[in-house]
Image 1 (cartoon, one colour):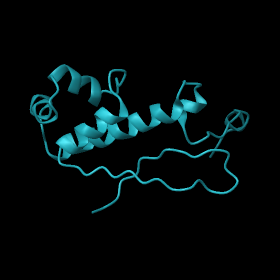
Image 2 (cartoon, helix red, strand yellow):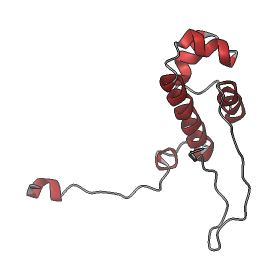
Image 3 (cartoon, one colour):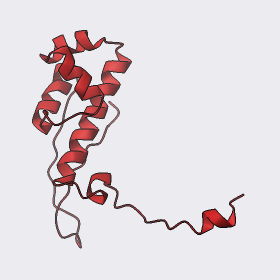
Length: 115
């Protein structure tokens, strides 16, 4: 049961991109990189790879893998993250299509599709 005090807390609906909501420059790129890194973390975890083993597969050093899995993505481009995914045996598919009517500009999304 919510208290009266909780009812007085203002709530603002997010845009769907936390980076845009926080005012990060290039929010779509930041979200894309975070989503790609999340997929890399999932693959490393599901394959039970050590950071050293993952580093060997992705042609990175272990500290870079540590940064990647801990969300420190400043040194990584989306392209580099996609190459890491393919090195881990994942297919990356890029689909380009027209934006929906009524939207001012297109968007970038990372989605996982079951094989």
